[in-house]
Image (tube, rainbow, N blue to C red):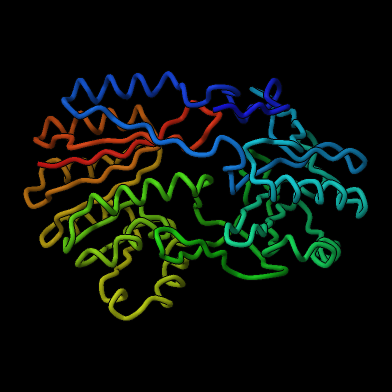
Length: 371
C-alpha cells in the first residue's frame, strides 16, 4: 500500500509514504499478545489514500500567498499541502477555494509572533453521504461579513460554515465560542445502520471507513441480551450501534457537548431503542457504580493515556463482569492496563489491530477480555 504524496519530504503529517501497512509496531503488538497467550492478531487495513474525512489545518503566510496546511517537523513553519493524498478529495477542493477566498477578500492569515492577523485555523469535516464539507473558520478577529461570498459561490460544496473565536496566544486550536453562520446545525453519519449526530466540536474519527470495521467486530463479539456500560463514550457511537442486540446500554462521558449530540441522536430513535439507552455525564470514576449487576459487559475507549486508575482497579476486582471490550489508541498505556487486568484474573480471548491512520506509525487495538 503506497501513498506517494508529493508533500511527503517536508510535511509532518505522515512518516511513511510507501508500504504503509508494514509498521514496526504491528510486529511488536503480535509478539506482546503471543507472550500473553492470545491468538495471533489479524491486522485490518483499508484505503491508503483519501481516507481522512476530518482535517484541522493551520492558516499562515500572507494575503497574497496564503498557506493552508501543517507545520513542518519540530517547527512552527507552516507548509501548504494542496495535493495531500490522505485527505478526502473534498477537503483538498475546499482548501483550494479558501486560498482564493482569502486573497479576494483580504483575509489576513494569523501571525504567531505578533498575535496579529485574522484567520488562524480551519477544520473541515466531510459528510460521507454527500461529500459536502462542514467548515469551521477559527478567527483571531471575526470576519463574518466576508463569509457570505464563500457560502453563496460554493453552495454545492458546503454542508455548513461555522465561526470559532480564539484570541489565545498559545497552541490551542479552538476557543469556546461557536457560531453557525450558514447551513445545517448537525452533521449526520451512519455507522452499522445507525444515524449518529455530530457537532463540529465533537470528537469524530478521521477514518470512518476503518472505524466502521472496528464497530462491526464489536457488534459480532458482544453477546445478545447483555447489559452494557460504555466508558469514554463520546457521543455514544459504539453504544448506539449495539442497542438492537443488547438489553441495555449506559454511556459515560465527561465532555458536556457529547451529551448534547447524544440527546439529538436519541430523540430520533424509536421508543424501544430509547428505553434501552442512558447517558451519564462525568468521569468514569464518578460512575463506577454502573459496574454492578446487571452489567456484564464493559466497553472502554480511553484517550492515549489509558484508563483512569480508579476505573482500572474497579475492573480488576469486579466479580459480575464477563467481558471487557477495550478499544485502544495508545499502545504503551494499553500494555500497562492489559498487564494489570491479566494479573487480576482476566484473559485475552482475542484481539485485532486496525490501521486507522495510513502514513503514520499508529495502531488502533481492539482487545476482548473474558474471565
